[in-house]
Length: 176
Image 1: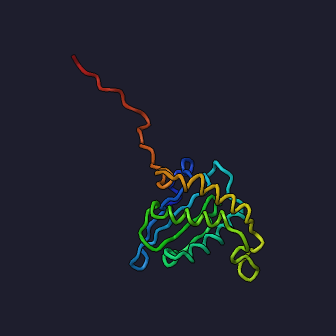
Image 2: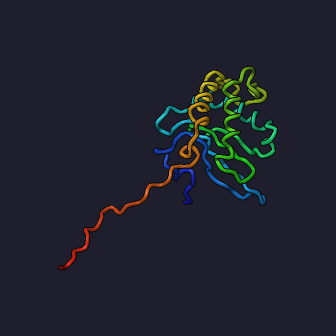
Image 3: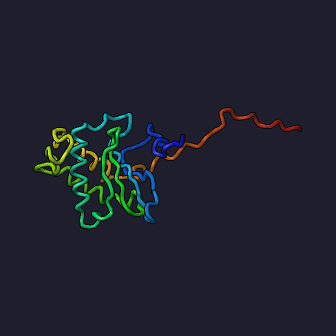
């Protein structure tokens, strides 16, 4: 069975950040998948279901209406592990390319007031599962603690450690 690339990332060392998860050729174009990691896996509590659902609605609405990026946004949605979101963008981009857009997006979510777009029984499959105050808090935390101060460690997956032999052979004996 073929291994899924995202399952090969060392989640024990993964920080919060924006990571290029994969790049795929689709119809002659590149689609870049981003890992928008809001929580350190297995070291921080996951996002609450209501919060991540609200972040999904707000971020998707913002991105699909963005004056520059709207026609490049393919998908925004939560990870099953509830530690972040996936963003699929038409084009060949790096994490650094997306950083300003993510700052804008999470600022929008952190400051949002009003009705949650698409949060009505006719528009959403679980319209009661929203938590705007928690979504705003989580977005602000990610914005201020990660996006506004991002370093290379927040923009590139952790490198695989060098592999060392399980036993180091003794040095050769030199004859005098």
